[in-house]
Image (cartoon, rainbow, N blue to C red):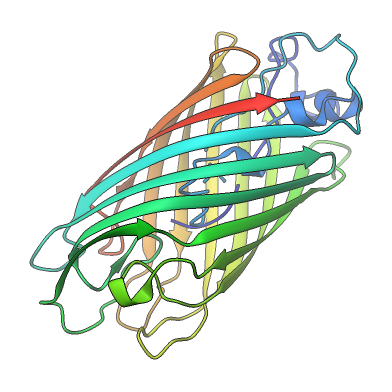
Length: 309
């Protein structure tokens, strides 16, 4: 799981727009609807954990601009509340499975071009004591110690700046800074007990009904004698397509360097579906397929978002 993530929401009026300054992302900014567009913070809350928050963690496209002709104040505040659920099971290369349940609650406030979000999760972990939600298997000995714990997870605080477009308005950029606050109890193996920092740059563009996006970033992990942790680079590429007027199907590929000297690089693919129930409510479901021992064998997630202007 790599980054924090991509795109402004495509309105029903502009879903057939072509690439360039007249695409959906351009429309939203130029017509005073910056918060009715998808942003890098609209991905699953769990991809906070490097595409686990470009999707809080791809993505719930929060607000659906069904009436782009309505007047909007460019400086008006937008508030978004998101409730997520994430379930995984896998052996991570060990002899026993680890079960993880993660329930993040997020609040986001936006005033173009700024977006600030805070995510507070509940975490349930059962299995070997060398598995973390974000990093997977860190290879810490002994592998035969088991944990069965639940409690508050680490809090994530993310700030995003939506930059001006480049290449004659064809490509949009978001720059995000994130801090992981050590609110999880490290003595119960729910966290590392240290503060982590991350930086991420998102790119995206729209061609017809397709939105292409990519992210790259770096996570600096707090050092602790309890775990052999390392800083790591991460990256994401993906595509989402609008079907009808309210439903998006998408696919992302995530890469993350190993989180410790005893673990593995992470390669994951995440298919997802996002549906705008109306201009306020969004529902997103996803699954993740991993290709190394840094990922679980089975992962599913569900996320609800409510946007208030």
